[in-house]
Image 1 (cartoon, rainbow, N blue to C red):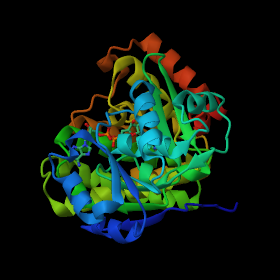
Image 2 (cartoon, rainbow, N blue to C red):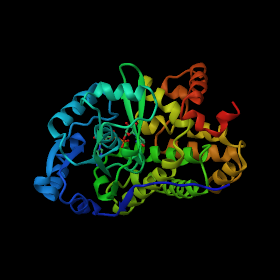
Image 3 (cartoon, rainbow, N blue to C red):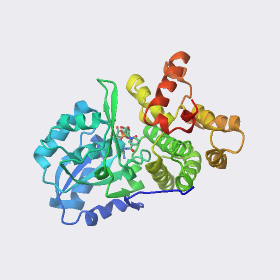
Length: 363
Ligand SMILES: NC(=O)c1ccc[n+]([C@@H]2O[C@H](COP(=O)([O-])OP(=O)(O)OC[C@H]3O[C@@H](n4cnc5c(N)ncnc54)[C@H](O)[C@@H]3O)[C@@H](O)[C@H]2O)c1
């Protein structure tokens, strides 16, 4: 069978590569979207110095998990006050990048609810206007810099929307591991596990293929080795660089497959139980690994390249890895009863991402 792979993002990786932002955006007016700690860390000043007068607008109050409650105001203010800027640069974790993806999709009137109505249909649409997006991740996790998706949360209604249009692929991704030096230990672990989850989910996926597997296997091997070391050595440039590259590879892998069951389960765990995204989509990985095994010979072979041929040993290895990072791996650890957990897994199998799981075809 032919393997197909497509990723239109121009990708620049390397220590100090943020400097290239000035050339990349030459002659263009820029709006910056970043996270609240960025100013105190000196990052906003660095970007102001790099771009000078071309930096015309700054949004720096992006909260974790972009929620419609906050996004509505940010979106409408952005189009009212910075509607003329040419480029939006997101410098931050997945929350800043996904916020920027929502911002660049302009509705006719500049009303955010118009965008939500379009998103609620779940159908592709052509936005009335849009902007170019450049993404520089400051966490090693989401891979959002090389994917077209943005997750938009509605915690009040217990819903999530997935935004995905041609224009939401970033034009350029700048992966500068130096920006990740200040990420605290807990976020380093949860974002690293998000990347692990992307890589595994791209393998036990109906869209997985030889090309995406190449990225996924390399990412998993790096993360299994690197994340436990990095957690105790947060200022180590080499480990930060390896994790940044691993998260990029995982992002590349799932940019072509989308995610699967562990992510589908995670949405409810985040909305109902408040789990950080990286923990919510990784604590079930040993369980989902067991459910994936034996459905598809090609997918099994790829999993066996990483874990060997014994599924129980593979699950144990993954469970121990997570426990060593202080991540609990059972639903009951998070207050979900066995009956509720079973219902949640079955419900998640029917979700858009759950249907990508190779095991859900047989369920
Ligand atoms: N679009 C995609 O493909 C995709 C994939 C996975 C996850 N996501 C989304 O991404 C979001 C999570 O992103 P995340 O895990 O990167 O976390 P995040 O962006 O929410 O950041 C986590 C915390 O770390 C802080 N932070 C970020 N960078 C920092 C730095 N360099 N130094 C110090 N503090 C820093 C942030 O302010 C925040 O408090 C979720 O909303 C999730 O749904 C999107």
